[in-house]
Amino acid sequence: MSTHKAGGKASQHVSPAGKRLGAKVSDGEKVVKGQILIRQRGTKFSKGAGVKEGRDHTLYSILDGNVKVSRKIGKQVMSVISK
Image (cartoon, rainbow, N blue to C red):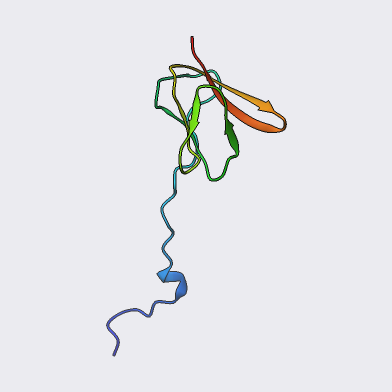
């Protein structure tokens, strides 16, 4: 006689944790040096002036200022404009 319910594939499935990707700030928002602008897989957004790209394609600010999102040759570009 069994003491545990038989587990099929569906009951054994555990979903992995979400990676919290996406934009962390919007166009026009104030940011400080080192603040993360967007976490992404691949380069959906390219880096512009005042922005650097991390090893995992994360864009972060290297200046204090306001975020500007624009398009350049079909690519979306994130920049930080200092005051």
